[in-house]
Figure 1 (tube, rainbow, N blue to C red):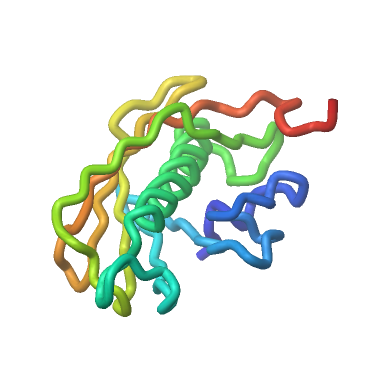
Figure 2 (cartoon, rainbow, N blue to C red):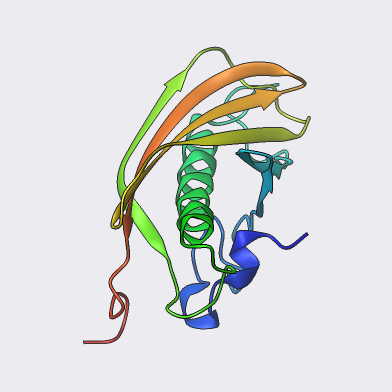
Length: 155
């Protein structure tokens, strides 16, 4: 199964969270599992907040990139097209909300599960749940905005 991020064109693959061309980034991958999108990420020891727990900023950035990836996947699905087909659909973050429910353990794999709450031509709202070992540790909401064709081009 191909991740939505695998369909991003090279010139749009530099993101710290999901860009395949960013050797220092997380390079997350998001897949469909039924009606949910799923991203899995195993934090490194340096993603620490306090001993034994993940830095909250990591959780926020994972929710962010999972949300924009999920938005692209949902838009392609809604149009009945293969991810990566022209015109390319990419989304940026319009807003990000993360609610921390409990500390996230450092070490085990983090799983982010997303659902489409709203899908319009230019805007997609993704609601996410962050889980570690089946325990929900955070909730997220990303309002993703469709990226204009010329976004990110040198001016």
